[in-house]
Length: 241
Image (cartoon, rainbow, N blue to C red; front, top):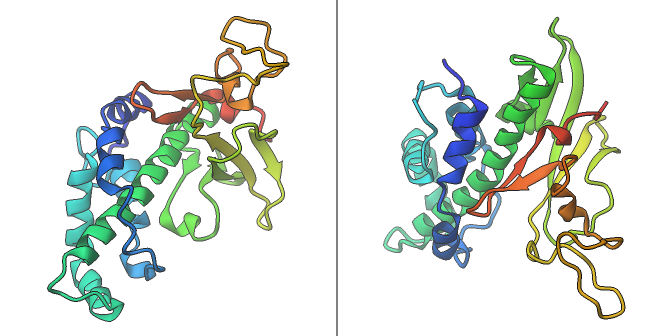
C-alpha cells in the first residue's frame, strides 16, 4: 500500500470537473433516505483515496470510483433496492443513488485532503482516517510518534454563514473533538462587507472583511482551486491543541 502524496492529491482535485458534476447531479434527489451501513460509501472512499489499497498511481475519478463502489456493494444495493419501493423497471433509483454517492464523495475527498495536509503538520504516519473513526464522529485522528492519541478532529462544512466567527478550534463535542470548519462561499468574488453603501475590493482598507476572505493573507486556513474546490492549508491545523 502506497499512500498518495499531498501534491498528487491536490493535482487530482484540480482536475475534477465540479461544474459538470453539479449540473448532472444537483437536481437529482430521489434516494435521500438513510442508507444502511452495508452500502454506505465511506469505507470504499477511505480505502481508495486515503489507504490507496489498490496502489493506484493517481486517485480515481468519481466515475472510476463509482464502478468500484457498485461492484463492491452490488448484492447489498440490489437488496436495498428491492425494499426501497423503487421499481426495477425505473432507472430513478440508480440515478438517485449515484447522485447521493457523488455528494458523499465530494465532501469526503475535501476532508481527506485535510488529512494529507495534517500529515505535514503532525508527521507522516501520525494521522488516521477510516469509516470506523467516522462512525465515532472522528474525521481525523492525530497520534503521537509512540502511537498514543493526541487530538481528535471533526471537519464541518459551513455553507450559509460565510461570516462565521470561529473558523477552527471549538471543543464542544461529547467525544472531545476539535471542530475545523471550511466554508464554500457563494460570494467568493465579493469578500468584504459594504459600509455606508461603499463597496470594498481586495487591497482596500478592509475593516469589515468576511471571514472566508482571510484566505488572502499568509495566515489563511483555506484556499480555493481554479475549479472551485475548497482545500485546507497548514494553518487550519497549526495551533489546534
